[in-house]
Image (tube, rainbow, N blue to C red; front, side, top):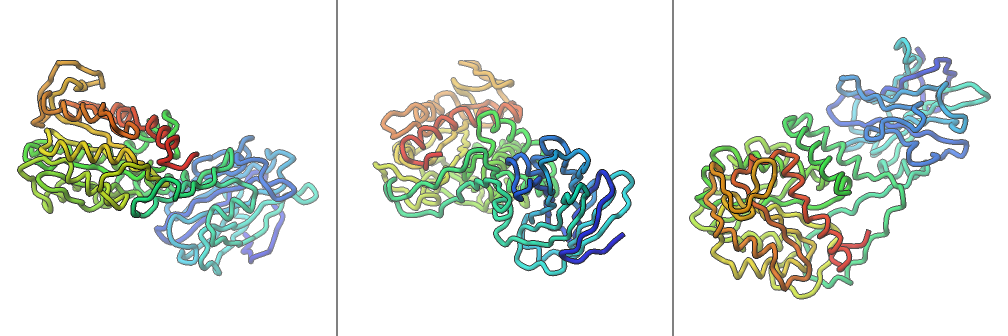
Length: 471
């Protein structure tokens, strides 16, 4: 075994090698590899091998993970199986949070994949503010493969590293801060991403999925199901801010007590983990008053509804508009009447859950109408009996009501929500509605499909009408 210093190189005689990154902390480090030609660039984005693209086109390079070990991630290279055009394989990594300078024990081990014997070790001791790193490179010289200890860092992160090697990186725009109402023309659209670009959105999703596996493993399957549903709709890398708006009127007591609202909240967080890069869902409540509660995230999801009701006990009435005003103020800086388009860079998806009618129908109508000029989509879900009730299996059941949901709603009470779904006088149709007798009658897959029934079409309209930047 050879201990290497930066810049040193040595011959590699093994036909297949494993480059394993190691570190001594709980921080996530993701190993990757880039297949490079004589000009030091990839042939295409497919030559970037990482967690979510774990195999090169010809199969000569694979992301093999940590083999169950904490503080380890690796890639494997079949040197004999690489195409002639590939003259170099760079072994790189990015950090999930913080910088490489904050990670102790950072090193790379090169081993013979056939028997596990160590060929070389390279310790990184001079990392500072870097968030991406090229640890080393395997390169072909006069028909012989060699390994060089590189140790080059990038404070610009994965994007800077990938761009240096010829990869088009398309990073989704970040959520804009709330601002005063301005006309659509005042917000310039971002430049469209290059065709075939590798999106950093995927890297962020991967990091959140890994966090879920550690902090809330019961959500992992839900997140995967949400991902499948979104991929079907062409929204696999879509970014949106996600809010859950919950009824805390007294008639909801049974639904909270049974845990059904908690289970529903967990499903919405799974959707949020795919849509929203910050891994959180904003929570708004309504009864007699409107409230903005603590955000829901991986750290507090297990007992979220129990905890939120301790701080916000159930109330005696139902006023939708009070929460709608809070939501519009939070995201767009105003809850006033709007009659002109307002553009923002990232849309808002609101899941609105209730079991009864509202006492402020006129206020609610005006909030839905005004928000149709904003990039905000309302997904209304009623719990109780309705002419649009969904039975087990997701089927529409006209006029057939099952029991046991725990909600107090009736078909007559939900006529107003049906009206909102079909309401005229809006800039674009910005709402959808369905109802269930029992929220747990729907499977996870069925629920995620329902949540995306009208949203993709709304996105298209929002872009066409200037509420969102074009693609």
